[in-house]
Amino acid sequence: QVHLVESGGGSVQTGGSLRLSCVASGSKHQHSTMAWYRQVPGSKREWVAHLDALGSPTYAASAKGRFTISRDNAKNTVYLHMSDLRPVDTAVYYCNFLRNPTSWGQGTQVTVSS
Image (cartoon, rainbow, N blue to C red; front, side):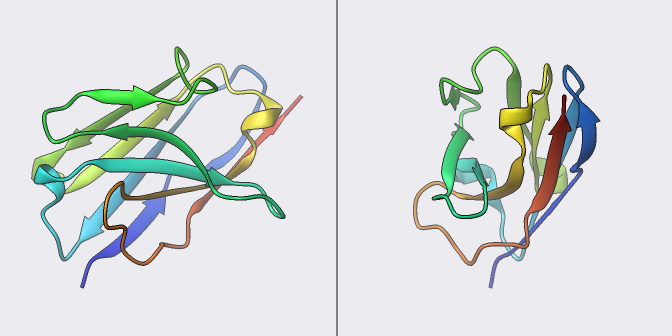
């Protein structure tokens, strides 16, 4: 069974940066498209970005130009580097397989203050 563990969140001020990590244990994800999502309490989970097996990224409009998704297959880890953070980016961030998602991890909280 695949187990997803997100980390790297925290509290930053507007304009700050964070790098989120997602380790997918129990699976080799290098042949899968991996995605990052975020969710604000009371709202639907929102897709942020995904990275296919060939390393081609796709970003939501809100993330384009500020966020970078990458992966380290040797570490079975997917990253989301976020820069120029804004208060609207405040959310719990999750990773999962874009297609055939598995059980969601606990996520990692990102809080951006003005």
